[in-house]
Image (cartoon, rainbow, N blue to C red; front, side, top):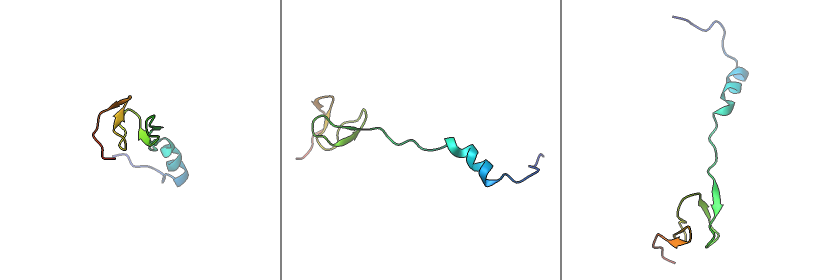
Amino acid sequence: MPVPKRKTSKSKRDKRRTHQKVAAPNVTECPQCGEATLSHHACPSCGTYRGRSVIETEE
């Protein structure tokens, strides 16, 4: 069974892992209330999506 001849250095290991990061979610502003919401999701504070009320919320 093959075994590595030399230990992989921290530098070499970290260079390989540079592209394995988690991207931040896209946050947009709700046109109705101005709260930050995720794209393509109903607004949790006012309950609207694309100008229509889709969730009943207590205000």
